[in-house]
Image 1 (tube, rainbow, N blue to C red):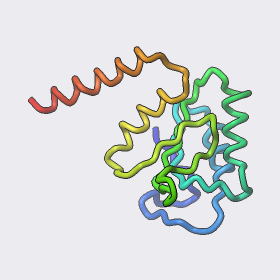
Image 2 (cartoon, rainbow, N blue to C red; image 1 turned 120 degrees about the vertical axis):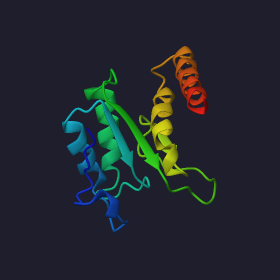
Image 3 (tube, rainbow, N blue to C red; image 1 turned 180 degrees about the horizontal axis):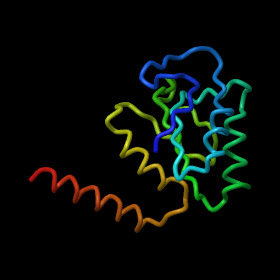
Image 4 (cartoon, rainbow, N blue to C red; image 1 turned 90 degrees about the vertical axis):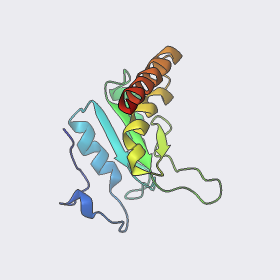
Amino acid sequence: IPLWLSGRTDALLTYPYGPTPLGARVLDALERRPDRLVIVSDGFDNAPPGLAGEVLRVWRGRLDPEGRTSVVHLNPVYEAEDFDVRRLAREVPTVGVRDAEDLPALVELAQFTQGRTQAADLWAHVGARVRGFLREER
């Protein structure tokens, strides 16, 4: 069940504004121990600086080392210098988003960047996706 934790009442009317209490929102989400946490952020963790990254580091390293909660950071803002995206934490995969239609596939693929799965798992996932695409074309 999706849970919106931006602090706003309407998920469709979001807009950027000042410092973001991202660390507090990440804590709110992890407190519920979800199967998956998807963070959509520009990667600027600034209220206070670094809190979200530290929460994610401690969560992954000490509170959930088995990875029961899958965490992925989706960042729609690319850096101009190197066309890369800002990460929140080394322990959490960050994926740059260019097209909202790609979100489901990006979230699924991000799980393979954590080193917790084997290459065979990735190939099985890709094979299943290809079979799904081929069925849709018929």
